[in-house]
Structure formats: structure tokens, C-alpha cells
Image (tube, rainbow, N blue to C red; front, top):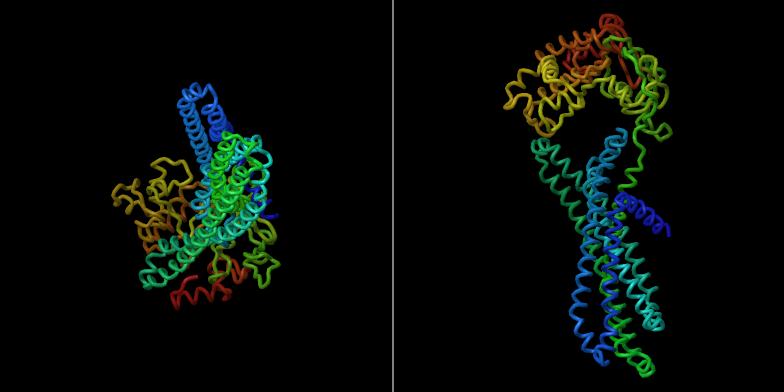
Length: 587
């Protein structure tokens, strides 16, 4: 019963998208009604044709018009079929388009924590595979469901009119048919849920193989990746065959049931007690109606499988759409932002605080960064440096405490306004399969001269001019046509172009050589006089540019001061600096 309620809720929700194209949906329904009426009309035509056409004195008049009637019935049937199929496809394609748009928009609005817990392959499968399956449910399946249901209703009405007693005898088999359909539904639903999960895993395998191709090659991971892919591929094949078995067994079983029903009706109608009560035309019309009933019933049995596929896929999509997006609220504040940042008793954990073995990534952070100050964050790997800066644009929400910019709690600001105040260049370089110019100006309206100025400050202008089309050169997926250092300079240029009062560099120069880094440091020194800057650097040459250095250990601030002050204290910073000098390690 619960599965039926879920199916009904999902189906009605999917149908609500169709009603947004009410005019075309109604035209499709009218077409299906015409199609259904033509089948019933053909069965009805048999009775007067045989009873009156061959046995009455007016037989020649009726037979004269018979060819025209046949053409009219078949033309009406074809017209109804076209109207139903074409306009339902029209509605279905709009449903798919809208679902894809909503799903993609939702992907962009989900919190980053969602992607920490879910593979991108499964998310990709939802927008490509699942919505494609849903398209079948919203067009072909609904077409068959509505059209053939109307046909069944029309033919049953005619059968009841001819002989309600025989029709009731035929309908005795309905409970058996319902039981068969319920069993098929349950089995198919379980198989299809698992198939959806396996398709997500397979998509993730392919994406990982593409993204990690160089690593696979250098470590000779061909066999491992192939075996992993083939394992998932074979599991999908087995599930598809089990699904096919469940889908295919329904039709012969239903045909056997309907065949027994037809045989029983023919036997009863030809028995002596029925012969005087039924004319030849009535007999033929009843049998024709029953035979015509087979096709829509068979289609309805088959469409149940298609509909279940669509409902399972749609349920997966709707569950995804129902995930809460990033919390966004507050009122837009019209002001000139200075970049004054305060962390007030901030704690954060990547897991739920109540979770077993949960450990805080940040604990009771109290930190104030003055406008136009350059602050460096230093600490060993896992100390919480990147986590600390990721809370500022609300990539994650504080577990405790609050963060303020110019005295405003960032939770009370719209995300668009908050993030407009922050420029960011991180250690994970994100570039798009677009031109150099569009990558630098991503999300911004900038003139060519502004783009070139940012590229110059990022020490990128030299290599850009050497590219085949200069700033118009398309750099490939994730900047695959550029070197690591070139990609990093493009990302830095993008951050510099965004004239935000706060700028964050999270190991943004890690792939640069010493000469390039030195030139960028000179540009940053000039920019720091106009913006609040937070640096997370792996080289102490960059750290020493800061007005103040904050040292983190295990999510806590343990020291802060200038380079000389911290060296003099001979504490955590001194140890990191000493190790870096003696072993040439990074922090």
C-alpha cells in the first residue's frame, strides 16, 4: 500500500509538469479519445453490418456505403493517433527540458557538503540517465496509458450494452490480472531501484577514468580500472536481464488469461441456451470487441513496466530536488564594504557534532582581520587553514559561533552579496572548457583591457600571447591544454580581476617557479594596499609578506604575530620555519 501511495504521489507530481502545457495536453487527450472511439466504432459497426447488411432488404444500400465507412473509421483512427502521440511528445519534451533545467539549477545551489558525501557520477546520472527514463514515462507511457484506457472503457461499455451477463463473466478474471500486475510491479520496482544505483556507479567509473587518466597510465592501472568497470558493467547486464524476464513474462501470462476468457465466452455464446438470444451480428460484434480489447490490455500490461521505470527515475529526481539548497536569506545592504572580518568563537566539524568519533576541524576560533590587512595562515596539513577560509564565503556553515564582515553577520546577508565581496584562488584549480579571456572574466563583465591587466599582474600575459589564438584560445576541459603553472596563473588573474574588498589565496602559487612567484608577490603587495588579503602559502617567502601571521594546530589558533615576533618566541611557527629551512618542506 505504501509503494502504491508513493507511486501515485510521484506520478501526480510528474503530471503537474504536463499541466503547465495544458492546451497541448488537452489536444493530446482529445486525440486519444478519438483513437479510442474509432476502435469502439469499428466493433459497433459489425452488428448492423451483419444483421442488416446481409440479411435485410436494404443490404445493398449499407454495403454501398461500407467502403466509405471503413475509410472514415481508419482515417479517424490515424488522426487521433497522430494528435495523441505528437502532442504528448510535445508535452513530454517540455517536461524533460524543465526537469533538466531545474535539476541543473539545483546542482548549482546545493551545499558543498552534499558533494563531499556523494560522487559526481551519481549526480550526473540523475540529470542524464534518470531524466531520459522519465521522458519515456511522461510521453510514451502516458500516451499508452490514457489512449488504451479510453479504448478499454469504450469497448467494455459496448460489451455491457450487448450482454452485461457475458461481460461480467469475462471480468471475473480481473482479480487474477490485478494480482499478476501487482507482483510484476513489486519485482520490477526493486530491480529498477538497484539498476539506478549501478548506473550511477558506472558513470562514476567513466568520469574517474577520464579525470585520472595520467595517474592510471603512470601506475599501469589499466587492468584494475578495466576489471572495476567490467564488474559494474556485468552487474548491470545481469539486472537488465532479470528486469527483461519480469517484463517479458507478463505478456504471455496475460494473453493466456485473456485467451481463456475468450474461449469461455465463445463456448457460452454458442451453447444452446444462448443461441436464440444472440443474433449473428451481436455474436460477431461481441467477439470483435473482445479481440480488439486484447491489444490495449496487452499494451497496458507492457506500459506498466515502462511506467514503473519512469516512476522510479522520477522519484530519484524528485528526492534530489527536495534536498535543501544552501541556506540563503537576509536583506541586501547598500554600502561600501571595507573588508573588516571577525571570527567570533567559531567552531566547525565536517561530521554531525553528535556523531560517534566526530572531531572538530576548528575549535573556538576568535580572530579579527582589519581592513586592508594581509593575514597569513600557517600550520601543518590538516590544521584547519583551508577550512577556516572556506567558512567565510559560507561554503560550509559554522557549527558554533558567527562570522562578521564590517559588523554584519554573514548569515544575514544574501549569498550573492556576501560572495560578491570575496575573490578566491585556491590550490584546486578550476578552469572551464572555454577561452582564456572567458576563464579570466568568469562571472564578471569585464573589458578586454581589464582582462589583459589582470593577466599581466598574474604574470600570465607572456604565455597567453604565445597561444594560437591568444586570449581567444580554448584551453580544454579543466585547462588540459595548459601546464600546471599556466593554469594557476589564469586562476590568479581571475581572482585579481574581481575587484572585491576581500581576496583569499589558498596555496594559489604552489605550482609556480620561484621567479613567477616573486613577480606575483610584487603584484600582491601592490593590491594589498587596496584590499583585505588572506594568504595560505606553502613557502615562507610568501608568508613573510603578511602584516600578521596566524599559526593553527589541530583546529586551534596557537600563535599569532609578525614573522620576527614568532621566530623570537621559538614556538610552533619557529619549528615549522626551522623544518622548512633544514628539510625544504612546505607548510
